[in-house]
Image (cartoon, rainbow, N blue to C red; front, side, top):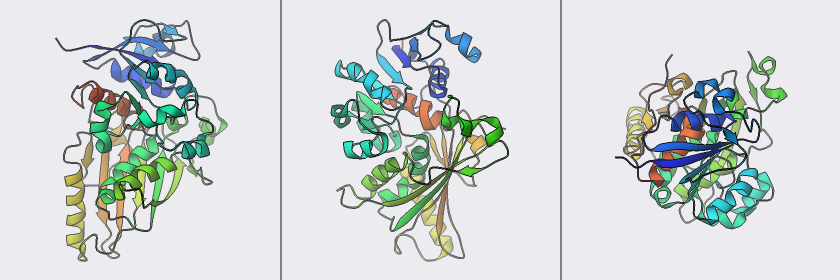
Amino acid sequence: MDRVIRAAIINVTGYVGAELARLLAQHPNFEITCVTGRSEVGKRLPDVFPHLWSVDLPIVADVEGEVDLIFSALPHAAAAERLAGYVRDGLPVVDASADFRLYELERYEQWYGEHPAPELLADSVYGLPELHRDAIREARLVGVPGCYPTSAILALAPLAEAGWLEGRTVVDAKSGVSGAGRGLKLTSHFSEVDSSLSAYGLAGHRHHPEMVQELSALQSPSGDDELAVTFVPHLIPMTRGILATCYPTLRDDALPADPAERQTALRERYAEFYADAPFVHVSDSPPATKQTLGANSCLVYPTVDAPTGEVTVISCIDNLVKGAAGGAVQCANLMFGFPEDAGLSRIGVYP
């Protein structure tokens, strides 16, 4: 009989927490034994989310009973404050907030303020399996990447790892409204977002330092060279999905000069880099967000503009799955020695 891991979800009443419950309820090796919430305490989970009728658990204030693993969907600062005790006790933790994504305390504080448990940063692993699979297998504390960085880093990692990035890279990304969370905000009201497209975070977005951290480490493992990345996020009137269009500047000698050879060499680079990545597919045509709906997949499309020779890379993910809850489950699979794709779909719901 397969091993069953007892899992708790902290803050199940947000979008990411509810998505974790949906995915874990169908997982062959994880059993949800406890769910907590900052609101709705005392209700049963199906009373709040009827689609989770099969997860008939009470929403409690704190983790109760024996558990083998903690998933946290709390926001930054609140997550580290709540999770520090579990980490110190040796309980495996997968955190979907920003608290354990950035390795440098100074950089975290620049974007998020004071860190409640800075001593734990040295023990955390950035939870992107396509880059850190071996480290995640050995980790007890994993910080799941932000949704935008997941799409952008996967789009650009093959170029960075080859040492081909030079100058400035532009990431133009568009996200569905669920990325703003379940809390009430004027900017995510239906009347504000319907039939509208808007840019935001132009003075700086908190996901930017993750992109710089991970891509720079790939390009320059010694840490001597920090890449220049311009990131512009947009809000688009749909519920789920991120489409990131990335415009990298490459070294002159990175690819052949002939446009056809250039395109072939570029695709070969991506196919080689993601040969062992079960959830990243190098697409033959430009992907759309709907093709990743509900799946833990990332569709990547690298292409060359024949007249100019410039490279553009498009990536698509479901921001709540590969960009959050699905990425968390993927990491947990590795931490407990299960197949990386256990309980997760690579195929989106289309149309």
